[in-house]
Amino acid sequence: MIGLTIMFLSTAVFACGRSYGVLFFARSLQGAGSAFADTSGLAMIADRFTEENERSRALGIALAFISFGCLVAPPFGGALYQFAGKEVPFLILAFISLLDGLMLLLVMKPIKEQLAERQEQRSPTIPIWRLMMDPYIAVCAGALMMSNVALAFLEPTISLWMEDNLTRDNWKIGMIWLPAFFPHVFGVIITVKMARKYPQHQWLMAAGGLALEGFCCFLIPMSSTYKMLMIPICGICFGIALIDTALLPTLGYLVDVRYVSVYGSIYAIADISYSLAYAVGPIIAGGIVEMIGFTALNILIAFSNLLYAPVLTYLKHIYDFIS
Image 1 (spheres, helix red, strand yellow):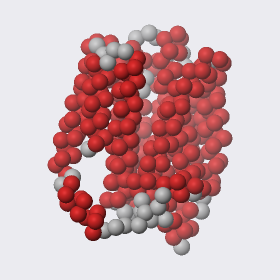
Image 2 (cartoon, one colour; image 1 turned 30 degrees about the vertical axis):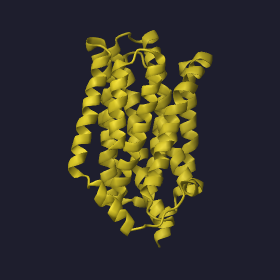
Image 3 (cartoon, one colour; image 1 turned 90 degrees about the vertical axis):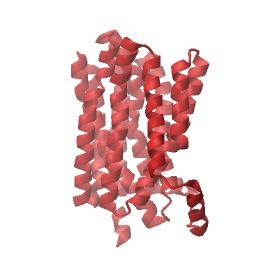
């Protein structure tokens, strides 16, 4: 609820903001709101669905909707910005955040009841830094970060490359992300079904996703039209679906069997992994493009993903813990 309230305020500030300082403040505020909502939302799902297959399915549905926001937003924002102005997309998003908050009121317990239950049930906890030091959790967090490196580096740079090489239409620049929603959802469905049959091979699914992302990054600079560019982007998003859907339930499983069920802490680590890629990505990517070009940037992303994929073999035997 706090996160949705902050996001409502931040998108309203975006709509009204004109100066760099105001927009920077709004973006920082939005990051704080997203951290509240994303971390607590994933933790609530993990807490509600304790059986491994059910948790994978529920987290997969959540990831599908996260991808819906990430991939539908660029064409939505690009078209509205071009045809209706800057304020309209942000006002619509502010209204959606407000509506979501009102819907949350219908399902959440009153605060007094929550506090009373917390006083009655003092569950054991563990410091987040200890979880970060766990090598299995660190490998998962690193993979989640690497899975988002491609999008984090490409989103701020690909539009400028498209303007120079393919098209100057804002709606076309945004439209390249829209078809990727469908392979992402398809990847979520496949991973959930595969994880149900072969839970001990989820590390392999994630490694395959990283390798696919790396291969698709090689293809991006070769695209000659904006429609052709959609193909490798679809491949990248399919790979992200494999990684996220395989590793988020794995993180929940690791704290269950190695520590205590501190889902808030473990999914905070996952959120930090995403955020690190998106915080550092635009800064580094812009400098790399200026120094050695957009093609070299994609080659570096590809090699980084391909080199990290074998690291996931470290997770090969984690399901032996239950025996």
